Image (cartoon, helix red, strand yellow):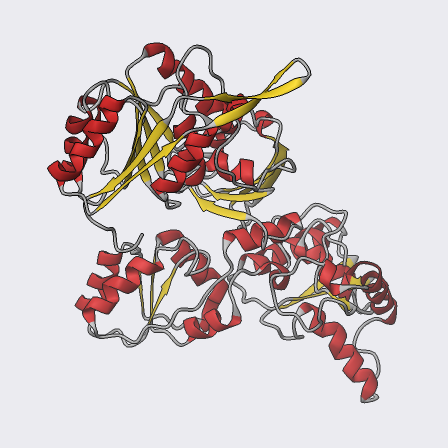
Length: 545
């Protein structure tokens, strides 16, 4: 049925009954207890209607599912008709309700409706939804069954538990939803794993505890750490009951699918937002901490993505829920810390290639590793998606860029001593949208001292310090895979000598003589480039990776 101003008014329109003592009598029936906010809203509606109508309209409230659930009341009338019991409700109001249901709730194809809850029809079949908000503003207090984010299994587990444990806001919310059916003897407002374990350890009276968290236990949830803490105690049988994650809820609110979306969490952690957006048509982002909605939209603008459509979901499933859709450049203001961001990029490029054309890079007069040499070097590096890479002697940053593209969950440190080259690397970083590329001005090996342990290192320029650079890398870890480009015989000779000095298990040299066609008048001639040797070395194999 169409949504109207409040839950109480919605029910009154649907379930009005025949007049009695007053000129009009309205019946409100709902499924929650008297302490719930929905009942309080109904009571306020009753008071206001009776006062403003001067007694002409009387309102009767039936809480606790006394007349069944909202849609069950119409089903109850249907059953009454089958049994010959006559009208339970005013026939005029009943016909009006049925007309509304056919107009708004009936869906010729149920698969076209975004629905998180129980389905009794498959995608191609027709069906009726419990509540439809089409063409109307969603109420502050939504229809319970259409908006609940707790599964029936979760509710049954809560009913059977004697202790409730969780963050303060979650415990309060669950207590309100469960109402008098929850028989909790004790409630502990703790959510840190060690604190939860301490509660269970110090309270021997706990027989069955329900530890409640927001969202789904398998989607960026604190459940994993809590489970680890409890398993160490070896005293409890643990059952995981999933809920509705914020991504699933938000996708339904927006009416979009999420099976083809990129899901990333920036709540208290770093991530490569820009590359996710550039390579995905749909991106859902969990925000939090320094990665607020405002800062993330600012980052999109910084990388030239300010015109992308962005939606913000704030306080999903709570009465203060707010959803805003604008361009990233237009989004401003404060949002709840735990908001979720949805970003659409119709122009996303999902293909990944190695050996990008030289023309794609901003170059000027700085030396650059050519496309063909770059492709072989990248192949020899054998990067993982989360590799940590040093690019020493970065030049224009062409190798840094390709490494960052191939390791979107990792990080690239571009080390360069030339000031003009440093600026060039930064320009290419922005051009390719690479948050995971960090420029380090300075000369190796000194510039490497404070950097994290590398999994891979590319040395394109050593300034005569090749042995010292390799020594610095191996002091951090002996597992680093190193690839060196040598243009001069002296560098090649020094690299070969490193095989015995460092006792590398893996040592491979490939010399590339590349010639590229060049048009001269009506003819095409082959133009040779300087030979480049690509040396691969690794002291210890990294378990086949």
